Image 1 (cartoon, rainbow, N blue to C red):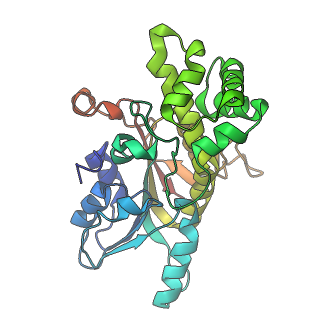
Image 2 (tube, helix red, strand yellow; image 1 turned 60 degrees about the horizontal axis):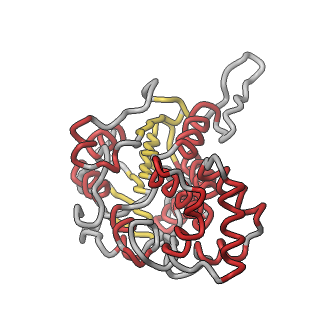
Length: 306
């Protein structure tokens, strides 16, 4: 639903995904349900969609459609559910026609203050996509060592002055626990350049969000599970929003590995299980960016299983 999440590259992604109206598809990141609804609109009565989301609030937006199966879990487990679905239907090793993943945080999660995803609101430092369990951003910020915090900021946020930011956090929490977005902003304010304060804050929040939700490891497991779940010729369609996840997806399509190192047979043939459908990623139009600024960093990559 548009009130919950504004979809990015909606038509382009579903055009690339749905090749068989009678097929079986997976929406690995249900969110507001816009992609699942669009997939369902392209399918016959025999087509089905399996939709994943670890946020129970997201799944509450689901349409009533017998072709849609909702799964409240991390998309890293996609292959387990594909196998389970086939087993329950009595169909051995049934694979699927296409998988879509729209990575990142939904508009609803960003705009709901008490979820703690945005520095624009005064709120508790939560940042969990599944708010029902697991460590929060506050837990990490108040318990990790300076070296661990620096590593997170450098790897997941690509923060230039990660050492200084991490030391400021450690110094501030020695006086009192850092529990809210205001506490964090106050602690790290000396390290924020006045000309790009919001940009730096966004990187820092991204780093902690990725750590809280184990996003990079989940993405790696998802990519491996997606390949195992697709039938030959099946499509993998992924929308990324920052360089870390886009690099992983690009490398995986190229080589079947997140590090991008190609494995070749004795004849020099690339052994990647995927091949790109388009040479370059599809980007949002200027018109889409003007109507939805969160689309500006989006990249759509499409691959086909060999």
